[in-house]
Length: 99
Length: 142
Image (cartoon, rainbow over all chains, first blue to last red; front, side, top):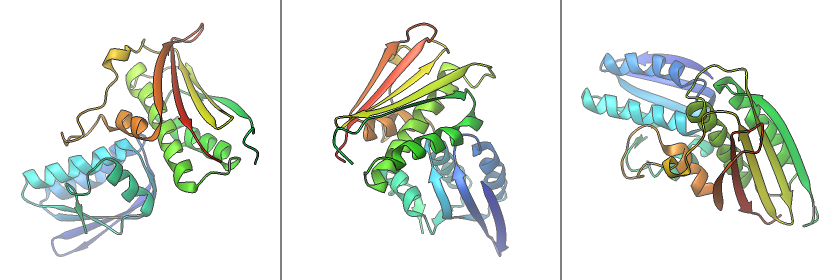
């Protein structure tokens, strides 16, 4: 997994790239959580994520819950077909913010 | 490809989260040989990777080990059988359950995905030298 972060005002956009599994979830959280803790609105661009497993979905849930707790939000952008399928399999399309 | 086509391939992997990409590569290589839809291939790869992840997380509780796990993918007469063998902590079948899907929290989704994708999930005591033997099966048309 690789990533790129861009900032515009209070919005931080994290472009994730590659495969997100248990092996990279800690790294993903290290990137995303400090942005949420800084009360940024975080946009996760998932266009280039070709694979995500239950560990990756857990990062999305944790991020969403942390943001809600801190009064900000995480919005999932440009979700790739394969990631959307896993989100729907987990029945999370109504829970997470899909932008 | 004939309905009687036979595939039987197995490989050993280190019990580590860093092996999961190799598990996926192996699974993709095997399913490349089968004439089924890409969506189904992707689902099967996910189920296999989730089961391997469960071995790392639960049978070995994320502890470092020199042990290997073995994955065997067999297809015959439209029945896909995927076997997982490990030497970790014995799995108690009663404790293998996914969380309630309405209870939104991180974790517990891997088993749910496996059960969504596969027709049957069976835990057996492994024959020596193995401790656990998980069998995932699914009927597929190809």
